[in-house]
Length: 181
Image (cartoon, rainbow, N blue to C red; front, side):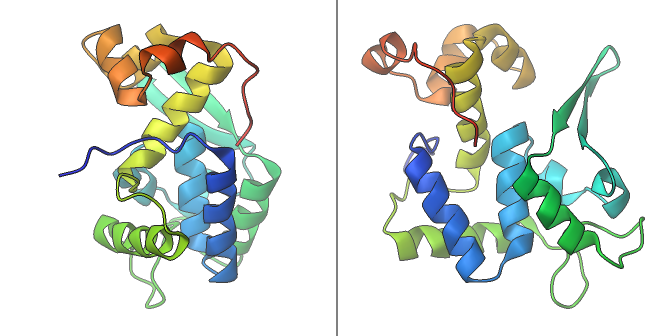
């Protein structure tokens, strides 16, 4: 079984986003963007309701009783949220199938695998890569392994380094400006 890896190339991220757009799959594009920009698990995102995102500046992430944080929505996410939530009940699940049923993780996984296959991407990239992509670019921008270790509930910094996919050469050369996804 292949090890899931983060998507470290912004050009690949752009290709994935464009593929979702070409398929008119705004729902899954929003899922992808939310995940790579928040680090939330797909299961956490699938539990969001319309009221969690509609007319909001960002997504409030409740980490524990002492710490909440706001992840601001970028312009692209705001536009998608407005399209997806238009005319929907505030208590409705955010991510629905064409039959108005909540979408499940397996469906998202299969749709993303098809996109990766169409783009000729490595089998090491899956929806599990989305959180790792968030971690990789968060580290690249902020150099804060302690936060990431805490955020992912890792037992050590070394576990976080392995999770992000930083090798020694990669780790030593990452001191450049972070990139907005």
